[in-house]
Length: 49
Image (cartoon, rainbow, N blue to C red; front, side, top):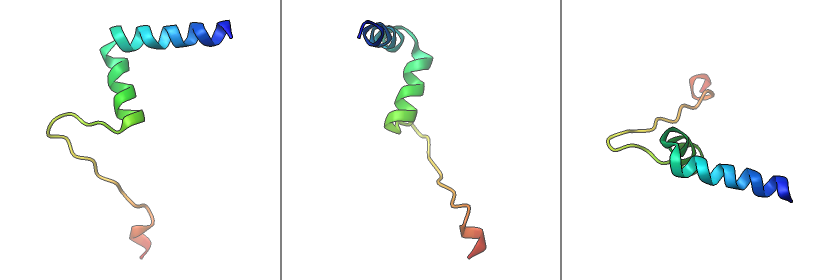
């Protein structure tokens, strides 16, 4: 339980003080984009159809 608390505290600290980490989480976990960005989803099986 103490290890989990320490990990959560580290996560909070990173989110509050590391803009690169915050951006990584926002993009990866929540699918957020910067203004004027577009996402292209590629279907690798589409070329076989």
